[in-house]
Image (cartoon, rainbow, N blue to C red; front, side, top):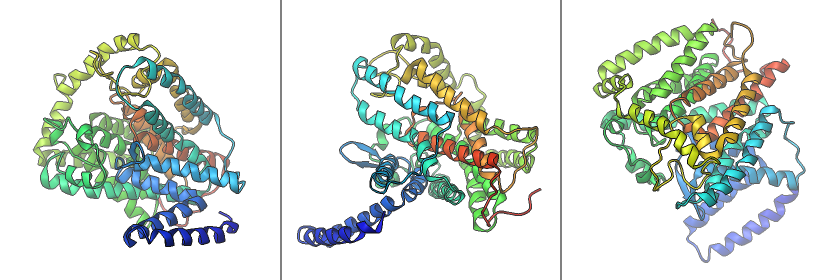
Length: 469
């Protein structure tokens, strides 16, 4: 924000808050002043808003606020960041956006196309639901790839973004793990989450019974969603921690170590298998430390399973084809053609699958869930966007070294691969609030690092570990 705005804003703010003191308590006025200071700083530096999103989205992803409609703080923050970016563009004439690549164009096409199934769903689906709000929230989450391209152009900003993501994840893990290990219940965290703004908690976590009840609870609400978040972030945490020094190394490795425990206690089969596949892929490419991480992870997992009986039952259920969760997935797949025939153009955004008061089922698959919501064209556009991303960022040659220079690229690449592979078993990276935003933010971060590496630009950080083997 240019200095020309400083004096008028100061005069207007002083007058307004002086008047408010006559009608409001001093505490409320102080809260408004703090909010205004934060808002003015975001107007001046929207990057601060994106960093705040990275922190909050990993720490308290579903803390909500009512602004006419109830939405998460994380998603409201995305809209605030866009407002700040547009403000700068209009009043200061900033031109920070880079020319978009093929991936960004496919993502834009996906967002624009979503208007069609949105309208169809509003007309065809006879159910209660705020389709407009849900559509805007989804578009806001997907648009994070464009905010990344605009605000994370320099290496310092990307380094800060990684740190914000990891600090948020560490806070979430330090909140969740002690409570679960003490109470051994997925709902033990609920009273605290309610105080932290999880207003619709009872509706979302209504299936916390039986096997789910014995799995780890967290601010991600459902254990499978926690598993998805860990699958996305853990490779970045380890790659970052291994290649940095000082508190940055401690941060990355702390998130990695605590995240493995949380992932095991969540019992998310899809996330566990996905990370295992990605680790094997990295070992085949002879990425340093991968073999040791794989062996240590197996040994630690075996020790944790042996010392925690509920986890033993969950591991046995993973390989039991008669398990209720497994049986439900087979039922979903067998009924999916009927759902496609009933809604060939998708159900839009009014409700989540399945449509209420029908005998249809949902679907635990990333790509088929997109078909369910957006129809076949939506799935093809999503595949085109992710394939374009992979073609641009995939490693070349038969060996990939882990260095301080490429740690963020390799960590985000591996995490995104794990997220996409987990889509075979669950659908949380298709329309799950906030988690979808983190997915597309990571895509943007990865593309920026990939393009920097291809251009030959050196890493500028002085906090990297100089020796890797």
